[in-house]
Amino acid sequence: MSTSKHQKIADELRFAIASGRYAEGERLPTEAQLVEQYSTSRPTVARALRELQHEGLIDRRAGSGTYVRKPESEPGLLFGLLIPSLGETEIFEPICREMARSSQSAHHALLWPSSTPGSENPSEEAWQACQQFIARKVAGVFFAPLELTPSGQGTNEHILSALDAARIPVVLLDRDLYPFPRRSRYDRVGIDNRAAGYIVTDHLLQNGCQRIGFFSRPLSAETVAARLAGYREALNQHGIQPQPAWAVEGDPTDSAFVQRFLDTSGVEAIVCANDLTAAQLMRSLEVLGITVPHDVRLVGIDDVKYASMLRVPLTTMRQPCAQIGAAAMRALTERVASPDLPPRDILFQCDLVVRDSCGTKSPGVHSAPAGN
Image (tube, rainbow, N blue to C red; front, side, top):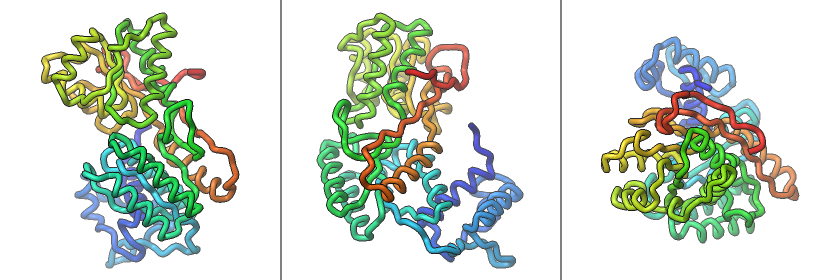
């Protein structure tokens, strides 16, 4: 579902206020500055600001400007947001935007420390953020466990032990700590990753592919293992025995590794663990002179912003980010109110978005069939 221009501006300003980028009483950019920033018209900017004014988030003062408004009631709960990959993994941005919207409407507040995209020590940054949350005595923490780093699992467990000791409830975003069948004792909000892996693989099978690979990066989150399980299940359902050489872990930017994988496996299509892997793999295939989808078909999972803008638009699974963000906020407020609830998995289905990279001629969005 597309978002109108004025709604996009309102969402981003709402997110900036909730995150503390604009503090109480601080002046927002002028209408002229917002017109230039968003390459839009003054009436569109004015409409976005009116929406925030009606919500009680801002005051518009004639001849002076627009300011962040002091809440009329005392703020509710203060939650910590610990997402080490927030600046690198695009799927978290729209999720957090909806969480900010939900927190504002309930008079809650979100707190998160600054993070450095591509940091050389993400584990240390995450631990420092955890310590900050404990010192601020937050009511609860949203946590997306670290991945793609050798020290990630140890840091994840260390962070959760510290939050447990401080009696701070936690809701996990997107991923659990452990791959199935092991399960942590924290609520998790995300997508049904097994179903996503199944549906995107089944789409390739339904369109004539037989030898289908799966490409992921080492030390990925447990969500990738679930997507891999769904991929294998789809192949088995079609009477195809997955071969060991078809599923690999490696660097999708390493064109030599990619060439060896293709030579060894002989795959005609590849399910990528996520859209970033697909985009990087597409670039390596281009360097090798291998065309998508003529020589190799590609699909991803996530539907990040750039998926439709790649050289060959990417077929992928679209995460319902707004629903995930709202559900996460509800889950943590419920957990604060009822600490003894059993652990919950709150999982959403994804929609299949068909574009050129899979080699079919029926682009569009298709809702996931029930039961997968």
